[in-house]
Length: 139
Image (cartoon, rainbow, N blue to C red; front, side):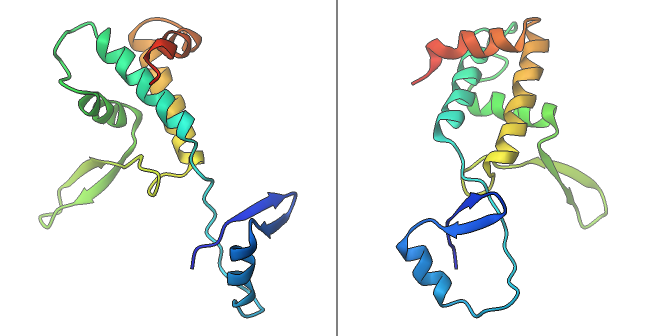
């Protein structure tokens, strides 16, 4: 069962009538709650604007064929990966997903901040410059 709540201090309140109705069906007592902060679509678009800007200005033209290729490279550079153990015991790494269902806003913000820092170092500029110059790439 999936419920949406509004947090106020130390209290969680159902965000709408349907959530209240669902919560009424849960027996009283201890329950386990997994908290995910909803993702910001605007923040997601901002990341891809930055990636488009970086791709257009990369020092080695053609090194990355698409936004997705650069995104994967940035995931590795930022350590946004998960280890996969093979049957023979060797470990390799696979990039984690930033989809809305797999990555909440807290984790996404951390990834975003790391990407901007990595790109600022690569382009030898400030984080402000990266964010400010990407504005023309917003769709």
